Length: 393
Image 1 (cartoon, rainbow, N blue to C red):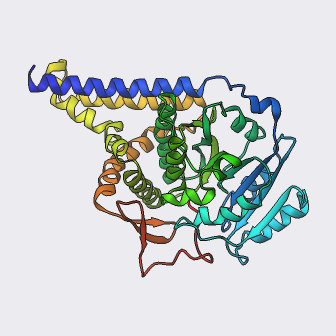
Image 2: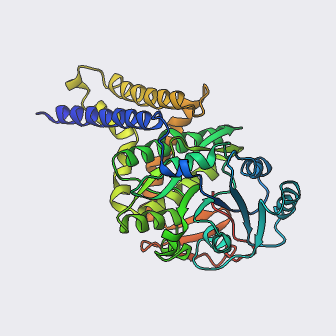
Image 3: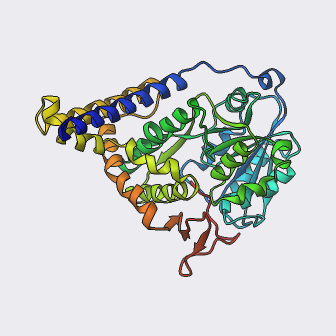
């Protein structure tokens, strides 16, 4: 086969792999909700939510978790600093919904370099139920939030989680973040689970408390700088699996600067590079430009012009993303194809940076993530103290 023929063949293979991944994700996301034994039992559940600062949707997301259609559950909000501006809002909600349903715990426990995990420790210890959900403050919970978490728990499950589905972007930067979160990251996470390679996402995590306590407790999630990576490894080491909810829960975005969106991708890419290197290496194949370049080189073998072949690759690639998003109800508008293009232009640089640069920004805290998964704080940056540590996105 000629070099052009090889280039054309590999380009076709990459496009086919992408189409298959989109089809798998669509099948997985449209699958009817499973019926687990926990749904028949409806056990008591505790939701632990670490919070810090006031965000655009803080009230809405907090209230959404207090008005669930579930018979037996309580919520523990955890805040590191008693002077945090979120405290008055939580105290107001306690007055509305009652101290029996809502609690606030102030003060973290430094079990790791992860401020969110440190902020959850006391809430975890105070939970008296066998089932505990660790949920980020910016998750918008539907009425059947707990039922959907419980429904995914099977006899082989060690953890149920949900990736975020970006929604309600109010600017183009936030639309780019939707393109990253939805048709890219959520899609591949559901593909991984469908292939038996499920991995955790820290936005919503349902734990069986006796199971985690028997395997090191919540402090064990500090074994990696990212608690979701540590969770994945812990569950797999016990011979169990990570499963995902039927459909991911919303994270309303509001306004996001494009620079901040890329910074978050730098941080997440670096974390994936140091925690799951073999899988991270392959991520560069998940964007269309390698396939487009190969299609241009192989255009003669495909019987197309040098420009037509790569444009066809991009058209097929983004058509699949758009159809998947439309079919499962993810955010779409007329700018979404452009947002996807910006996403894919940025990603190769993000991927490469993860190998050569350890310096990342964690919502105002500069840190260096080493290849052993540890981190070093920048002396000139704010410290990750209990008073100023920011909760990760």
